[in-house]
Image 1 (tube, one colour):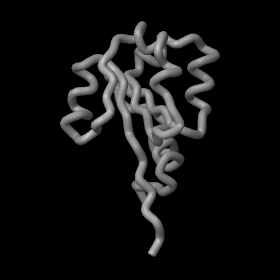
Image 2 (tube, helix red, strand yellow):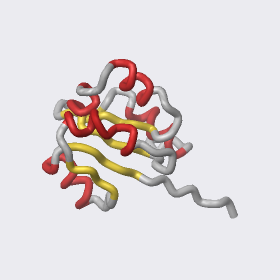
Image 3 (cartoon, helix red, strand yellow):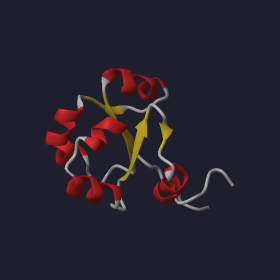
Length: 104
């Protein structure tokens, strides 16, 4: 039998953003504003996370170099989500994180 891979999912954003994820079972949530995220981003992102969901305006608060570094990292897969909807690349990022395409 194949070994199961468990992916740790975390979420960062304002309390109103993280609340829904907590209710869905995400246990690692960071309630903070965009400015605090920008100053603590290196402490929050670690290689033990598989997926980090970030409120969209928090990613926009980062300096461009740091934002690109995070977006291009293999692990964790960082998924910014805005009020307008999920990142257009969400499907491929989830596939990258867990190794399977859950939509097929």
